[in-house]
Structures are given as structure tokens and as C-alpha cells.
Amino acid sequence: MEKIIDKIRKLLALAKSDNVNEAAAAAARAQAIIDNHKIDLALLQEEEQHEEQPEEPVRRCLDFPLFAVARRIPAWKWDLAWSLCDANQCRPWSSTEYDEAEEKYARVCYVIGRTGDAQTVQYLHQYLAHEIDRLAKTHSGKGRTWLNNFRLGAVSEIERRLKLKKRYDRKALTRSAAESGDSTALVKMESALARIEAQDKMVDKWMEAQDDMKYSSNSSDVYHDPDGFEQGRTAGASVSLGAGKTRALGTGS
Image (cartoon, rainbow, N blue to C red; front, side, top):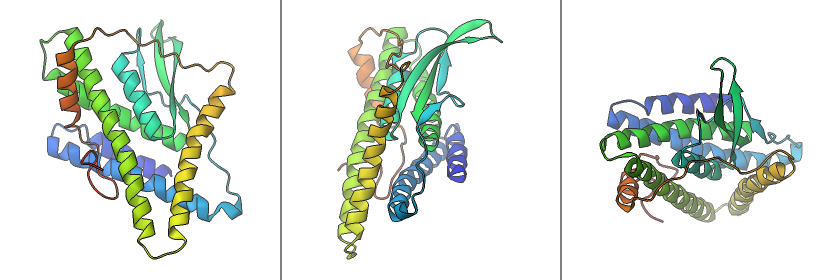
């Protein structure tokens, strides 16, 4: 698993390249590895469940925060965290902490989930936040409210595409298993997908059992600007999110 994460980390570092084609190719490859590995791992767990392999535990992944801000969390960064966590069986969580080196408080966002899933969220959040900021900078001079709405619009479109991909990939995987001619392939695939869904519930149940956990982001308020939001959505459609086992993300279901 660590080798997979390391490969994703290196690809997402390349995805920050100023070369647009190189960045898109690297992001696409990273997302494809994430998609393939998640299903393959779920299938492997189904095949080896008789060996009673222990599940990777849910935890607060304090060793790699998503981001830290001086005051209130920008709403678009929090929404992006939620979208990526939802796609990877995790949940975002924020905490106010005192930085002794800087001698000031900061709001830090972490991920709740299994370590491998949380690391995936971290790297994708870094890449996508970088892309959204890069696109926003092409509209300098529009004002803070417009740019905040632009970023929110971009996140909204990315979230829509992630949900579309999730539905499409699962339909395609199930159809492929049904057409394979293997009488057990479809049962294994459906069981693997059910295991992934169960991981979502496991994270929620873990959080409910913690006395000090709550969904409070302390995110900033944003005044509405329809034009900024719609232009952000258009820009969000151009961000490379990669291809899974079948076709490019956002191309239809």
C-alpha cells in the first residue's frame, strides 16, 4: 500500500507542473491508480476473508493535515475536503491549535478514515486546490467576492463529476463482471462494492463514538455572486480528474 501511495504522491507532484499537458496526464494517471487500487483491494479482501486479515483501522490522521489557515476556513477548501472525503470513504474534521513556533492559533483540517484513504484525500486536495487557485488567478481584478464564488463554483463542478464517475464506474464494473462468463465474478464484484459502502458507515460510526468529534468547520461566510459561481463551474469542468477503468471522468453515464 505504501508503494501505491508513494506513486500517487509523485504523480500529483508532477500534476502541479506549469506544463498543462504534463500536469493533466499526471493527474489522470494518479486518479486511474486510485480507482483501480480501491476496487482491486476490495476484491482481494473478499477472496482472503477466510484468513481473517485485520481491517486497517479508522483513526484521526493527525500526521498529515489537509491544510491550515490563520482564521476561518475558506468555504471552498472545506467543500473540496468533503467532496474528496466522500469519494474515498473518509470525513473531514477541523481543530483549533496553537503553533508554538509561530506563537499564534491556527485552524487545521484533518481527515478521519483509514490511513491509505486519508493520504489519497490529502494528495488530491493539494493538487485540486492548486489547480483551482491557478484558474482563479487568471481572473485577477474581479474582487474577493467574485473570486470566492469562482472557487466555490469550481468545487461544485468537481463534486458533480466525482459523483458521476462513482456511479458510472460501478455500473461499468458490474456490467463487465456479468459479461465475463464467470458465474462467481458478479457475486464477488457486488460483495466488493458493498464492502466499500460499509467502510463509509464504519467511519461515521467511529466518529459518533467519539465524545469530542463534531462537524464544525468554522468556515467563512461567502456573499453570493452568480456570475463568479457559473464561471467557476465552467473552469471546474476543465480540471483533469483522470480516467478510471473505462472512460474519462465526466464524459457521461
